[in-house]
Amino acid sequence: MTDAASPERFPWRQVVVAAFLPTILFSVGEGAILPIIPVVAHDLGAGLSGAGLIAAMIVIGELLGDLPAGALVARIGERTAMIGASVLSIGGLALALVARDPWVLGLGILVIGVATATFGLARHAFMTSFVPPAYRARALSTLGGTFRLGHLIGPFATAGVIQLTGLAANAFWIHLVACLAAIVVLVVLRDPEDAVTTRPGPAAREAAGEQHGLFRTIRAERRVLGTLGVGAALVAALRASRTVILPLWALSIGVDEATTAIIIGSAAALDFALFYAGGWIMDRFGRLWTAVPSMLGLGSSHLVLSLTHDAPGAVVWLAVVAGLLSLSNGIGAGILMTLGADLADPAHPGPFLGAWRFTGDAGAAVAPVLIAAVTAAASLPVAAAVMGVLGLVGAVNLRVYVPRYAAPRRESGVR
Image (cartoon, rainbow, N blue to C red):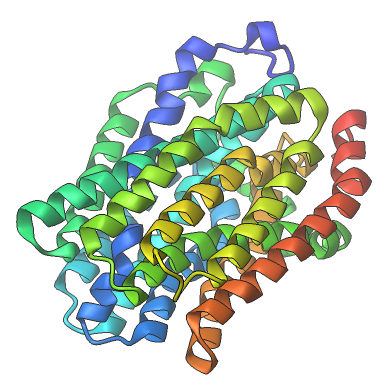
């Protein structure tokens, strides 16, 4: 058995490919479909606000998936949960591919969101339990970087498919193939958990899930979830807003689908380039040094976007703001996962991480719905401005509560 608390004894070379490759594959598929969900919904007859609501189904699905995911991972293990999540995502993709009505498409996207929550929590739980604390932020930022790499590659793959076929909905096939590839990798490669510990049996995992259940964990941690958790929800809300509002903005100002995918993919390159720097800063100087600047940047970029809809060179402004959003998001890579890991019990992280991710994903789920509602009631620029203000509020929350909760637990070892 390897001592997870000992950095020099952690078997990085044995686990890095098996730990990160399935996440990259799954994320490529997710990155491929995010830019085109509003477009496909619009093609099926949804209006601008309806397309935004259907795009929100993926984060609503993630919110619903957080409810059982922690207990599920505790019972069946990370690899089995990730394989099941990939299979479930394939089912959602099948619904999306056959959809002839916007709400059938929305149901398929909802299922993909549930699968995404389970997949992400399973890998997060492994990193929380076994990565040495001295390297935690860098490891979790690298995990966040794998999602960003997928969101970098995916839109370019989508642009190529649209150019070849002329049909945005064909991007769903990219995600389906990526899920199948992730399943193959998970089955063929050695489970990274086997390299660092003896896997507990099903009875032990079930007992852990019962002892540290989601709702019991929420009650026990209600103080931190009701304060710092609100900041996490606002971080997730601004991130979700970024993925929804950019395609909607492009649709609103008349940018074609392929160009939209290229703009979003190019911005994702900047996002990906910064992930390790964010983790290094967190490990070296503390969590605040990335959390607050990231939120200030996300909020300010939304405010700038809100002023450019009818400005000369609106497409150029879209590209510039997409880059600013990616810069801000890249600096904060891994911040939510790192804070969750700081607060979780490393022996049984699944239930707390489920509660923590549920809190964050609540913000991610509300944001697109809020954007759709404000767009329907007022306009898309007003929706962007509202999200910008929420970003600045989130920066204040993190400045107040990260030192109060996350730092003392991380430094003292209290969980």
